[in-house]
Image: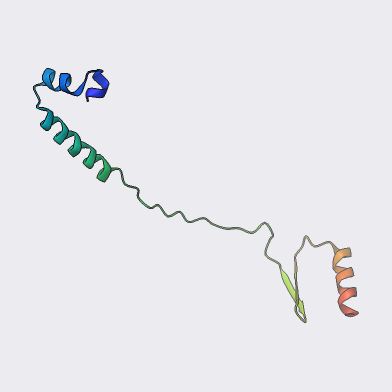
Length: 88
């Protein structure tokens, strides 16, 4: 392209045996081709979502309260929750 040569368009065309009209015709064609070829393609990525909490081994529900209990549930916490639920 003439931009890389540092020449004016007319000088570039004269050096390369092109008419000014032919130069701009082909410049337009190259730009149009570049626009149609550089489109974006949608890429869908499936992301596996994992909870930071393990699935409960036992689920207890009282009224609208649902508790998930697993082997990591502290026993003193569980005892306090049961005590509160009995009095609710």
